[in-house]
Amino acid sequence: MGEKKRTRFAKRRQRRIARRQDEILTAAARVFAEKGYANATIKEVAYEADVADGTIYNYFEGKHDLLLGIADRLIGEAMDQTVSELSSRDPGTYVDAVLHSTVRFTRENQAFLQALATEIWTDEALQRQFFAQILTPIFTAGVQQLQAQIAAGEARPCQVEIVVATIAGSLIAVSLLRAVASEHFLADFSDDEIVDELTRLYSYGLKLSSGEMEA
Image (cartoon, rainbow, N blue to C red):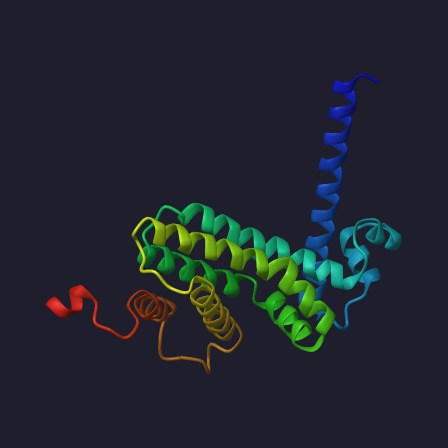
């Protein structure tokens, strides 16, 4: 077999593997959302994906690996896309757009995020994997984005890691609470009102902005 044919064959094989992994992750997300992570079984995931039980283990080590795979696909890819699309915006509009994107994302994936949050809270091994594989890359991208804005004179000098971690932590907390307990958490306010207020808080602290001082 020539080199070009081997390359084409390898690429086709990679695409088949990626498609099968995606099919399995989609099935697992449905099963986890319906049954709950703790009650779901590999057999149920395999049935939903229309594959043999053993096929799952050709692509994933087990339920933990499936959960992280779904989280990476949903959270990591969504944040990567958001950061890429908004990287040229100024800090204020950037924060506003990220907040809107995150709140919308948590509402659209509420059932899965509830399952994920429960397992991460109680499983230390999964917690370590989640932070290493999912949150750390997102955190790193946020640090790089803020550093670039500081270098361009678009944001003030600051302890970048502290600022990004604080914003990310509060963003995750607010988004999750809005998704799973909207009837109790800031129930009198719309998502837009919350995002607008948080954007001003992240951009100006509790000081009046220049526009507010002129008014």
